[in-house]
Length: 204
Image (cartoon, rainbow, N blue to C red; front, side, top):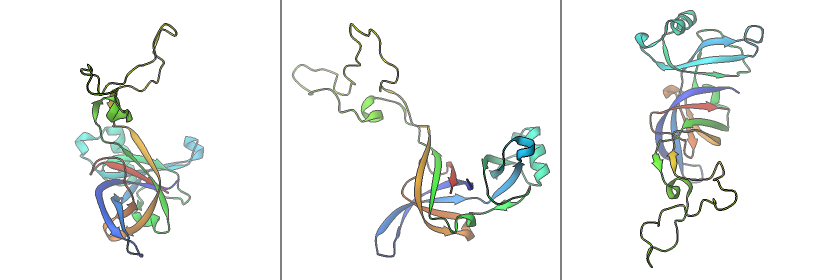
């Protein structure tokens, strides 16, 4: 599935043709450089590895520096593989123009980390009972977790408090509102997981 590596800029809103104010996310998509070409004969599958964002040479390993020099490009901070229908060569640059005729895209991002959270924030629990009549500090607790005489254990997967956020999230079928090739920008309807400035993958 063809796509690009990008960076989430932030959210804004645009007016549609019928005058509605549509919230959208602005993503800087590319330009990405082809750093490796995977072939069926050599690697067992066909794909194109893209690089995005500049990295310092001192922070890049020697094997990766060899790949970048072979492609004739500077060290890249982010790498990802995509399956393109069209054939590309090492060092080719792919821009946001590949989305010119695309109506919908999938965007993969990393959600904001919230740290350790309770069940009300993490899972939307309603809390336990009233806040008076002898109840002291149980208002935001999960309540019964099901362990009693049988089975004398707590089943795996039970929703409890814990680490929230920081997960890989794919938002599917986001409508492409506008592509601005001169600034490498793409505007998609709705929200995308992650904070401003985070790296995202845009796929057709």
